[in-house]
Image (tube, rainbow, N blue to C red; front, side, top):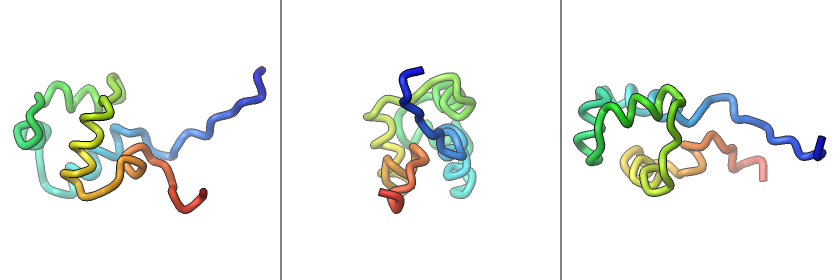
Length: 79
């Protein structure tokens, strides 16, 4: 044990992205078309099978009007 413990956020990145997408009433296909990537890529991210690149996270944050920290499940008020 290295003594380093990472506290995982209550929601995964994929769950947060899925929740935001659904709040906007978009399908994976519709969101993918708006941002220039496939619904398959979004499906893999939402299911936790793939982590989005920092560039994809930035595009998603801009689209959803939130911060990358929010998509990562980080509570910026705890710092």
